[in-house]
Length: 483
Image (cartoon, rainbow, N blue to C red; front, side):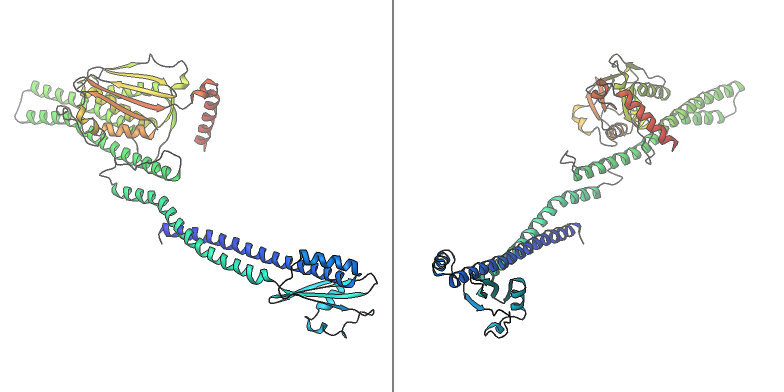
């Protein structure tokens, strides 16, 4: 059974059951009130009739006038009075045997009694006159409210239940359709995503913290992790194949040339020196690539810790210089805040290291190893990292494609690359709830701005709570490590 149908049935059962119980409660309450109210009417008429007929004439006239003026006669109203003997034996009195068994005995015992026979209601009571004579006063009448109004109410409630059932069914259907449709849209969109197009994302129509938005955000976060994992592996493979290919080609070529004929010892020594130099280069690049691989994401875990962005930038600079020793990276820390807590972020150091490395490596490569400038600053609870190069830039017409995997600008033919570094970096920044913005002018250079949320809010720092939070954080991390 479809989820939408299940929800419709559940809502229908819940609301219809509530409506049914509520209607039953109303019907029972009004019916019960009708019984009680009608017996009270019978009691008033029995007492007033007894007073008007059994008391002195002047008082009786007054009672009769009041009864005629304020008490209308009930349908099939019949009042009978029986004088009881002093010994209380009523069995010999004519007419009392026609009532329900136990009715007279209950009147004599309790003073009143009542019962109904289909539409006719009976009420009996005793009345003692001024002269100490005791009478049985029994009144009967048809309860018009029960026979007409309550029946009308019952029919009205059944009609209301039928209408309510239809309304609830329609409302439940459209309600579930409205709230299930976004989930169906998510399902259809997820079906389109595969390993070939992991760059696709679910649309988040609302930024509110509702369940659908959270579900879409959760899927997008998962896709970010998957795409990051895939692209990290491809990034390492492409770097390895490119960086290792050149020295290996030199070694193989030198060895082939040397072995092509018999040579003098001096020539063998020169060839071996060339092979040794290329092997040393190969060793350095292998170590650098291994270091780059260690900064990757294994797809199984994400450990976010507090780290300082200035230290991260210094570590990235060391990594880039090991990969490209000829690179020229200048770091500007002139905008650093006085309070070092403003530089702390909550991040996965390995992933963020990889993202910054890719961006700075691109700056070095596409500027033919001209100086690359890196600046760090803080503004309104955000850490801002700027990476600026003086390279070939990106054509304005191609800027909209720069985040597509494997896309390379038309002016990059003379530079090696695979078009996965920038999409990978943006995904990593997104995973850290940050933003990556690229501005570029062809033949002038490219500026990349990375904005990341600070670990501490400005209010926490201004109120001096950062140190206290830091201690609690370290204590928690320590306990987690011990466990």
